[in-house]
Length: 578
Image 1 (tube, helix red, strand yellow):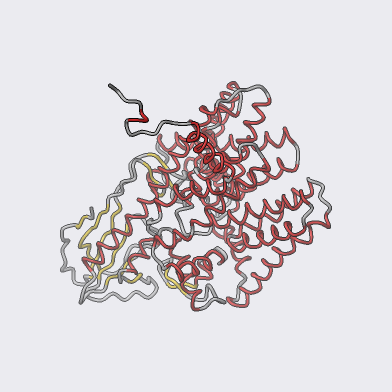
Image 2: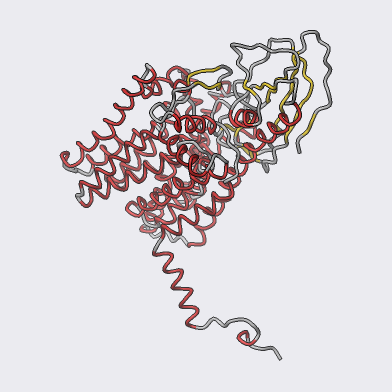
């Protein structure tokens, strides 16, 4: 005889148990800050062991220098371009994130897990701040915050030690306090918001864009000028003080230097501007891919179809005009991806414009300026297009989606919760895929450096290397030395390691012989974030016009050369890292 569940070891779902579980869920929903913090941890904790990569080493070096010279963060030199150069002229970011990193390193240590763990706090603060801001600007604020988290640009940026997520955290909380201060006529909140604007600006210079942004909102809101204008003097004074202090320390104000840097690097022509527009649209659509996936729910079917066709035609024409100016000739697969994400980028800009046109209030103006301003800066003002510059758009993009869904509901368009889950989950899966691919991309140089140093750094031989980013960090960690191309003195028995996928690698003019090649497979799962032949250049569009690209990512190779003035050496068997 089959026993009831209550007699066969299971507990029946009594009314008390059901109420208990319901109360727990209800209690959790009443504290969405805790829920969002848990979700951020679930999303980012798997990446805590990610090797340092791209500009992470620069931030770490400055952080370590701060421990002994706290008042002079950039007062040392580093080999980042193939020769020693002052760090104050190498880095183009203010130092606040490095001070935080220095504190974290002194308390937790300098391992990957410790430093990435410390940067979970800014990520949590940014997402909770996005929820707090969205609560004022749209329905479904929790959904907006989760949507922000699971964009490729936020997840990937959240796995680095660079200043972007920290700047975003200060940014959203500055807006939260400023807007709430205006609503409640609280001078204290407005002052606190102004202080956070200053901190955002000293974390990343783009944070200074908050000054005109909140000014525009305050004017549109018809806030009395005397209630807010004076407080904007706080971030202005902070930036002027930083400019003067760095001028005294380094003979050159770093704020002005960073502002002039794009004009030195960027070329200016019609074709280059068209290329920037195409790449900017592709980066916006790709980095904020979950927003693109919501398009069928945001517009009537007829408008979706017409908008997609027109956007494809416009993107295709722009891509054709700029076809010869991209880093590599575009393949059909690259063109297809550029067009898809460019359509998404156009859709995002259209979403901001439509919200402003329909609502015509201070909040819609804030969101439109936030989105449009970030896009214009990324595409045309920054020294290079990259995903990190797109990151500030993630919050207003998610808010605009929720506002648009609300507007459609008021028009009688019924949207089931299940239908909203599909694009959300698809976008989250894509974001995790991109972040995982970048993790594996960062892992390859670490493994290559360990293999090279363990096999070729021994008595009687000096091991040099070219290349930077994470490869430099781990080569130096294992005892190798960065090659100074301006003062190059190779001797018999010296080895030089040269990676094939890195930056600032120059052919050697000295008599050398290739003696080995170490290859490290990159199991990117059909995705790459920095691979020129595939067109992916998340960290710099000079590598590719896409933030990420579908397709296999080949192995990373490091060739080893030996100083051979007499031509006696022969190539040995290649060493392969598995």
